[in-house]
Length: 355
Picture 1 (cartoon, rainbow, N blue to C red):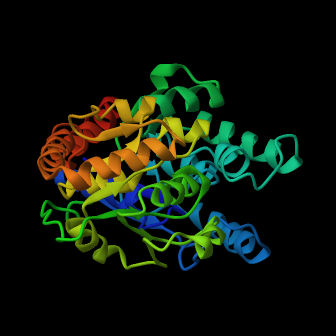
Picture 2 (picture 1 turned 180 degrees about the horizontal axis):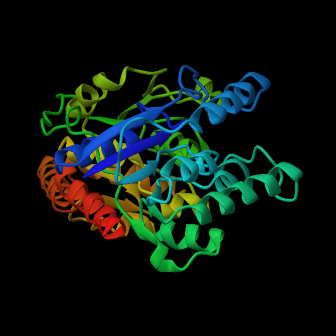
């Protein structure tokens, strides 16, 4: 079976790289038709005239039919504006949309860049709905997000399937060997979803424990006033992240209180689990789809700095608990979110469409 991975997707974004790797591992021949629009910017998806011009040119070029034959087409993330070109290029063959997020939910509800009743908000919601309806199948990252996307697009629930995000295993592999000095490591873009303020407050409470924040973004303005036990590294190359995880006392997930935060399991949680590192993250409907509190992670109430501080201290003071959670998290990852498991899942979904 041959699949065309298509659009203006971010080629190096973990969701796209992992899906392509998982499909190839499952014996699917994946070819790519990719036109770069969002790469090369520290703040991808930032609105602007140059980005709009690049996007318009890319969409025009995407309309050209590829020379290679294929059985199904996958529109990668972010590809909400690529569906019209995708349907033309597919020529009646199945089109699968891998949206990962809603544009409205991301820019209006989560990042608060636009007001809910603004023209921009209404436009984003329309783009979301039209893109979701244009696909023969939408693949979400959690059951919680699948239900949300189905409602947003007015789709039958059986038109939205689920494949976890997983981790790119050529990069993230077991090897946890924590440094002698316990450090709670937080990796990610500093956006509201991740709950940076909660992490910083937890660090103030657990002032005897080291924290390390790796990343930059919207809420970076909170960091100059960080407590003295918090180290900040603006960013690291993708390939260096496993080294940081392997040496961490524990990895921190997301702790935001938005509705979106309740529906997602972010890349960094899967990456930490794949590295065999104990994880602390928010107790949400999405996290409960994969993780068991006290068994494969420590789950704390979203936005609760006291609970997060207590959880970090527990792992710092109890190496046996940390090891048990590390082993339990790696087992959960291998059973439900490994490249092998997800590759077979993605292949099965596509095979059902092409029969």
